Each structure stands twice: as structure tokens, then as C-alpha cells.
Image (cartoon, rainbow, N blue to C red; front, side, top):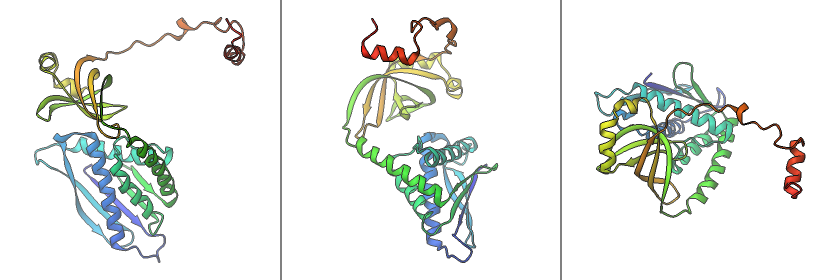
Length: 284
């Protein structure tokens, strides 16, 4: 579970695939894996990909193994999460035009290079993540990926015009780590809107959370609502949050739709007719 196999095929048996092109494809793909790992933000399970073996015969094949930065670290679960992030991220980008949640503007270059080579000189790039999970990039899917990246890049240019600012707001997310951010007590949170970020705690909150909560809250993935002072960097990216108040989100009871349905809401009118009259001002 700690390795990946990258296989690069030329357009035909007669076509030549240069080792330099194949290696650049491998290097860019490993950069994508590194980006996904950074996005997960788990410094305690950090690892690096080491090339274990390579075959320059057709197809060009490389095996890379994950090795922990700290020899005593247990990285198996973290490696599995990184693989999942890469697989879902690339597939979502190609199939739906959705950018991976871990992708930064700087990561667009690596992905664009991978897709471009698959349109010029490489017939397919297969990434075997083990257990039958293989991500395949072909010229057709590469074309879809390039079109998605072009649209994302246009949006990035707009966002990049945003200036640094501070605001007060509320964020909901899952607590995934506790530690220090710039030498201040903090928790790391994963939010659907902002991805992974560190939230600095005041001394009051440290005292409250230090006595009432345990490491189990992190392992169980507690969902929190955080009122905070939010610092945004250039481009609108959330750089830091300073928590003012933290609440745990408890299970919300299911809503009984039958209890809130009003069969007489439209006074017997067809919904489209009701909306037309409402828009025209014919309803009091």
C-alpha cells in the first residue's frame, strides 16, 4: 500500500518515446502527488516518494515508494489518503471540470504539462494506485483536462486581483489536528469552502479546550463552528483564522417534511402559474 506504478505508453509499437519525455512525465506526476499531500496538511505523517525501479523498455514503467520523513512515523493511512485525493482530483477535473480541492495555482503547470504530453508523443499515462485503482490519462481525457485547466486559470486570474483583507465571520469545518501555528496554540480545520487551514486559539480557548477535549476529538473528526477574525492573502485565499468562539456541531434531527408542507400555499394554482402571477404583481 506504500507504492505507485506509473506506466507511460507510446502511440504505437513503432513510435519512439524518449526517456527524457517519460521522466518529465513522471516528475510532474510525482509533483501532483506532493501537492495532494500538502493539501491534506498532516506534518506528523510526512513522507517523500523515492524511485525504487524503472524500466526503459516499452512501455516505460517507474515504481515509486513512499518513505517517511521520520523513520518511526506510521504513514500507511496518510499515503492511502493521498492516493485517494489524487485519483478523485484528476478524475473530477477530467470528467466534470472540477478543480481538486488541494490544487493551488502553482500546481496547474504540472497538470498542464502532463496533459500536453499525452497529446504529443504519449498515448497513455497510467497510474496504478494498487487494489485495482488505476487512473488512466489518454489523448481524449487530456484534452478535457486542458480545457478544464484553461477555465480554471481564467477564474484564477480574476481571483488574483483580490487584495489582502481582514474580516470577521463564521466557518464550519472538521478538526483534524492540534499543534502550533507560528509558535501559537492552534487547531487545523478542514472546511468545504477553504480547504485546510490553521486556526489560532486565544489563551481562554486553550484553557477551555485543553480541559474539556481530548485527542479523540481529532481522531473522531469533530465538526466545529468557529467565529473568528479571518485574514485573507492576495488572491482571496484564507491565510489565517483567529478563533473568538468555538462551538461543537451536534447531530441535527431530521426534518419532517410532512409537518411543514402546506397544500394550500399556492391557493390551488399550478406552481408555474402561481410564480407568473407573483412576478407580475397579481397576487396580494
